[in-house]
Image (tube, rainbow, N blue to C red):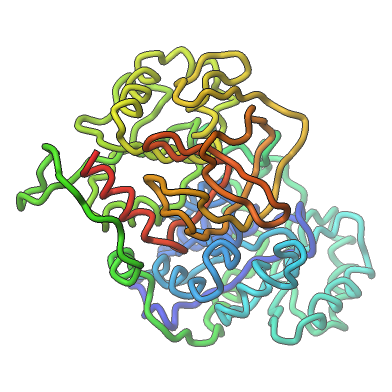
Length: 473
């Protein structure tokens, strides 16, 4: 099939009354089932989650993209959706938490319901029916009527125990007028393993992840009305406005710092200076928004991935490093054992090359993690903790750095079970204003390291500033 115009691409949102109902199983399975039938499926995830989009990418063969109204603003939800949905036949958007749950204390902001309304998309409600019978009707009725602007177009019943159980659920739901568009039995083969921060990322599971996604696709294809779900997706309202474009976003961003004198750098084919930005990846660093690499490329960088678990050298000619989030605590011994790469990163930082690190990247730059030597770029120590730190943050850059000018306001998200001591350097990265006032992170030379995950589409100038520093360092 050929892709449709972005404004009219069929789309639906897979939501649930609460976390743990089976959204990821249904959304990923639906993506896989539709892809297996020859459709180009655009995968999306509401909120800041990095792990689910990895499973979406396996199911569709396309980059999984996030739609986060808190991190990026409501005005970017539709453009970023349209960017991801270019050339696709259908889009499937997996929700976050319960349908109406969003940023704490902010009403509907960043909720699945808000994103569904912004996308003018119908919602399919996934209900864990394992401990319900007639009460399922009251639950569905409540979600249908709570916000009339949210259109719940169907229900998928998950973890149904038997044919008798299914019959009771269907009979109860007849009174709601909401069609049952799928019934899924309990199936261990589609379950994905979890640990301290949620599902185990795709990059760590390899063949097992592929098998799990295939099983999800088979289960959804067998238990759901695919034709009905496609028809529901086709009922989505038309969207207005242009798709997000990294180059256009940079053009409209506030001016960056002057370039200054330039040293020798790798040359692009047309002779234009093209700094190499090394982007950490692999099993230990799986958390990165695709738009970051796209913005760096649009700003004139040659983005080259590297794996700190395997590569002993940075990409040739690297003049800057970006290290996103992930699970270095799981791979601390392996990261520590790669002494050659740790030294290369430290040497690059000492030379004044820009390094941007978020969460896992922060831990990797510390002197040690759980007693094992890391890069030693920061005079700080990191360790695992029993306490989960989770939530959105409203932050402002305390001073100038390779990533942001002083006063730059960005929204971020924290999600970790680790502690870094001290929590901030002499020159902190951010002043956090929500939920409490504090300083956080480190700016040392050209290094910017912080626990905050940020989405650069909300402030594309940071990518341009980083690339300019790569040229001039």
